[in-house]
Image 1 (tube, rainbow, N blue to C red):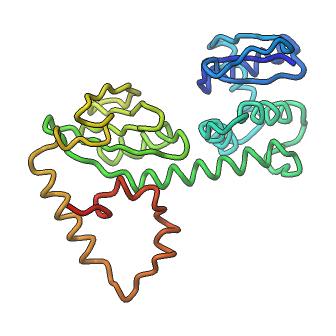
Image 2 (image 1 turned 90 degrees about the horizontal axis):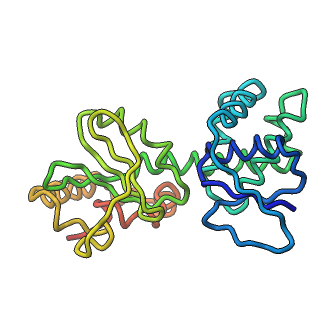
Amino acid sequence: MTAITYDGTFEGWLTVVFEVYEYKFGDVEICKKDRFQANVFNKHHESYFDQQKTTRVWKGLTQKISAPALSGLYQAFLSEEKGIENVLLRYVQHVFGSKQSIERDYSNAAVLTVVQTAKKVYREKHRMEAFVRFQLTADNLYYAICQPDFNVLPLIQKHFKDRYADQRWLIYDSSRNYGIYYNLSVVENVIVSFNEQTSKGKNIEVITDEKEELYQRLWQQYFSSVNIAARRNTKLHIQHMPKRYWKFLPEKQSF
């Protein structure tokens, strides 16, 4: 078996796919460079991002599968589930090895896994778009913290850029220690350094705008006023808004 390490990006993974064919690797195990553990029984190949190789693989895929299937491939990659790179490789090998479309070939384990995983990531994307709550900081930046199950920040940035085009905002994923920042022009990935007062970004009361507490109280009052106790369905509510998100929702907090 050949262990292939890469930089952890989707583009880097596409380079790996090209090199599997280029070097005619048989049995392979793909993993991120920072998670690699050497094994005396395996050969090791370190893959470096190559734009030309990445472009050729992506172009080949666009000629074989539809745009939704391409999106599903990317979404499955963002799941970061253990071994997903190898599942995606088998999916791509099935694509290039078949004359007909394989998108609905659910008898193939890789196809089924990719489709199911992509659906989970897409569901999480929609939840983040609904559950992100911004707080206004003293320097007029709208800040939100989240802990999505999957790495969905790349998928939600267009939604927030379109919706809040006239505001500077930052959405920070505290599980993956990076965020997306909109500067009124473009959205870019950022690494944020927090001081001890903010508890790694989880508590930003020390830097919030003086009116922020009032805004949150008004939001809580509104939420309480529209909540009809007689029609409350806790089970359904939790199904649509799982408890793991509540700690980031002002309407679920009390002062």
